Length: 217
Image 1: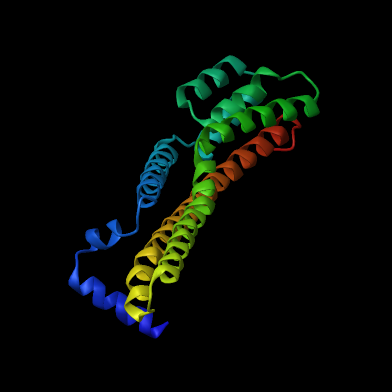
Image 2: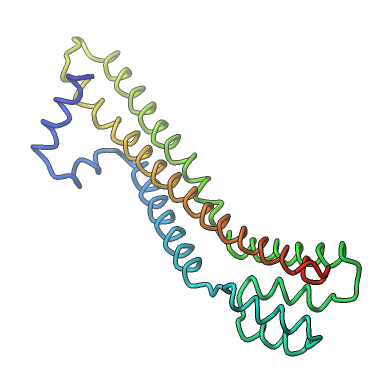
């Protein structure tokens, strides 16, 4: 392992990082494409999540007062003016007032699932890339090692340069694949954490609304 590291650093010192990556073979193309897809999905979802409007306790207190006063149309207008995930869920509850509590809760929950689907977007594919990229890198390394041993079988004599000269090139795909996989994995779980944090707020206001129509608050 130590010898391999010394050889790798020695090679890096003699060539550019770009030239080193290009020695990884044709699989570097698909791996590079996966990295671009990961960056695009993460950037697009991050922008979407942070650009969404949110309501606060002051907004809910206004809504609560309107519902208690029976001004449902005004409450609907207030929710429409905010136009965010929480208000769309609360609107579903307002539109179903007069129905059994269980049915109101189910309608709001269904609306919440639709909102979660909007927020998830293509996050799922980050999880796929986190699994596929390392395996693709290993495939490149394994195929390269097979070629090395095939060349050894054809050679009259075996030298360390014949083995190590091609081996470090084939290990590049594994390193790149693992790097892309780790970044995609971290991005996937970070975005999921953000979505879960937002859905917890929706659930909080949904439960507060149910308590409101149950005359508990």
